[in-house]
Amino acid sequence: MNPVHISHRSLADEVASLLQDRILKGEYKVNQKLPVEAKLMELYGVGRSTVREAVKTLVNSGFLRVQQGKGTFIEDNTGMNEPLNQRLKRANPQHIIDVRQMLEIKIAEKAASNRTGNDISKLEHFLNKRAKAADQNLPEECIEAHINFFQVLADASKNDLLSGLYKQFLLQLKTEMLENMKDTAFFKEKRDHYQNLLDGILRQDAKKAAFWSGKINGAM
Image 1 (tube, rainbow, N blue to C red):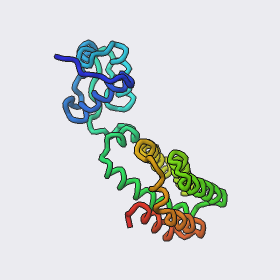
Image 2: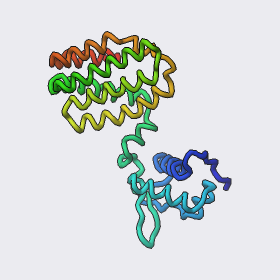
Image 3: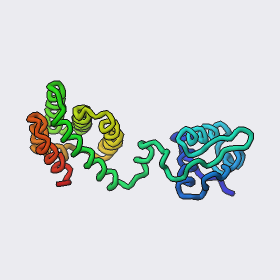
Image 4: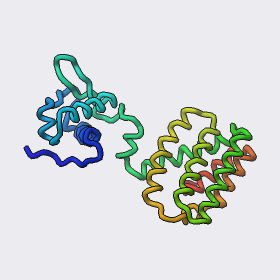
């Protein structure tokens, strides 16, 4: 069997990702024993320590379990135990957008009802910073202010679970923006929409805030 080619980003992470993919595809069944270390070393062309680290990662993620004296077995092949940030990396991009839009509308609604004066000050600060960076065509500064605005908005909802879930989506959004946005045209396009969203939150008008959050994302 020819070894699988591995890139040099992080050997253990890459092996873990390849094994996880095979588990999710059903090539390894629940309760099936994982091939022994020597076989995995041969298959992926890596050393013993790399294989052990990859297995440890998948054990911690809930995909594998270790039974002392018996070996390593497949624990889950549905992805249900997989950390959300990992699931987002392989999810359908449109599905990610759909869920993020729904979260943003609910966050805007809750933020309008529960925000404090300090929240408003922070939102105004980052929205002004975003606008200034957009006018100066500084995409990285724009992205930073944009993400910070939505982080503050999520915190203003005063729902830790909702805020924590949404921030997982923001981390991926920031990475995508930094990779793909070379200018600030996107940030100029709907500037008035963001001001209307902020006005709804300032006035504690949950319906207005939710409406403009939807308009921003094209959901309404």
